[in-house]
Amino acid sequence: MVRYRNRIHAKIPEPNDNVTMTMGNKTVVDAVFADTGLDGFLNGLKRTQGNPVAAETAALVANSVEMTGISVNRIDRILEEDVVREEYGLGANAPRSVYRTVERLGENSDAIVRYLGKVLKKQYGVKTDTVFMDRTSLFFEAPQQGIVRVGYSRDHRPDRPQVTIGLSMDRESGMPAGPTVNAGNILDVTHSEDTFEQIRHPLPEEAMIAFGNGAYSRKNSALLDKEGVGLVTRLQLNASDDRFVDSHKGDWVSIDDVISYQMTEGNLKRRRYIFRNEKLKADVLARYRRKAERDREEMGIIRKNMDPEKRPRKKYRNSNCFVDTKLSYQFPLDCFSKERAVDHAVERMVTGREGSSALLTNRPLTAEKVIELYRARNQVEGAFRDLKHGMDRRPAGCTNEKAIKGRILISFLALFCIPMARFLNQEYRGKTAESICEEPGSFSLTVAVGDNGQRKRIFSNFVPLIRLLRSRIRGKSGRIPRNQASLDAF
Image 1 (spheres, rainbow, N blue to C red):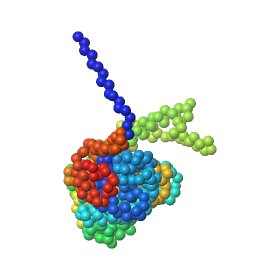
Image 2 (image 1 turned 180 degrees about the vertical axis):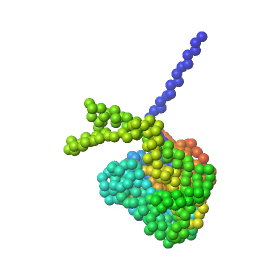
Image 3 (image 1 turned 90 degrees about the horizontal axis):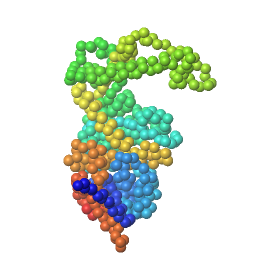
Image 4 (image 1 turned 45 degrees about the horizontal axis):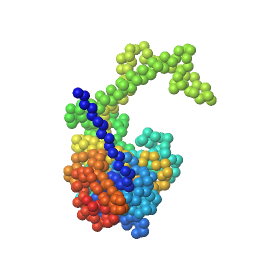
């Protein structure tokens, strides 16, 4: 006997006015703002009229913590709902006033960063003994105006104007110290002065700064020496390095099976370490070989198109009707076999510096310590990835300098809140920013509207991070607007 299973049809309920919104990111931001006192500092940036600056900033930062890109237009649409505005403690004019708040944050960005630096040092004991500095760029789909200028693009978009962003980060705590924003055509050497000036006051004696070779110059190194700050940076290999290596071929000192080094001491007691990485050298030579093989395949295509009855493909000739160009092609390695031709091409690409690098320090550090410090700079590279994920990559209507700095500061505050939540809770010290962002995303609030118009708030999905932050929010509730029911209802 054949048994048939009946389909289960879900009953679609009648439409209602209930509203469901995510509250996890807002809870994280509220906890950090309350614990650091940043909410009170932000509210002091304007008069008492209108919406609190801290509440509007929390709405912007909470949206940016999702790492999906901050968009003030999106916040504008979200705040059109009165239930959402009530949860953020905002009035009916919030959808428009957030634009002014972005500019106000940009106008006071330096003061906000200085305040956070003082709090990290005095309240949380962040020592900033070792600081990593780096720079990146952010391009715009907009014409050049103000600080939005064409320059060297790390986003591989030289056709678009941009701004340059500097970031510093404490090694031990993983806390970002602050962003600096400059015009898109400013070099790293010049920009690094602003980045160092921003973190100079919180630095203790005998502090160390690690940065890339683009920020190194005699002027910058002299500035660090004057302030008594140590440095570790990478330098380009030069001809004198080649001569030194050639004259000391038997003086390599091994660190492990792969890395070895030589040391030379220069002026002002600076140590210059030349490292040789055999694994990196093998990887570079393998990359040379892959390029040679691709070029040989392309050579075959070019030769095939050199038949008398065919014109060269457009990519191999000049197609400008006002230019008469005569092209000639030679194939000097065509007489060799493929393997021999590739070997010969690789030999011509080899410079002798493959797998080698030079690191400089003004402290009596060992080679192991120097290379360990420089490798740890990957922390700030990861922070830049998180920072860019939290940015609107093409804010076409945002060319005002204050608005640009405000948007970048909002992304920085989002970047600040995640490591701060990790710093405040020992259980999360080993987790990445992405995993921490994903966890509170499931915590939600449903505002159920009854027939009589009464509203009932239902919180769901209490993840462990929310439970840990709950006590901090309730303990600091004196600084949080009382009409934010989401903060005192659970």
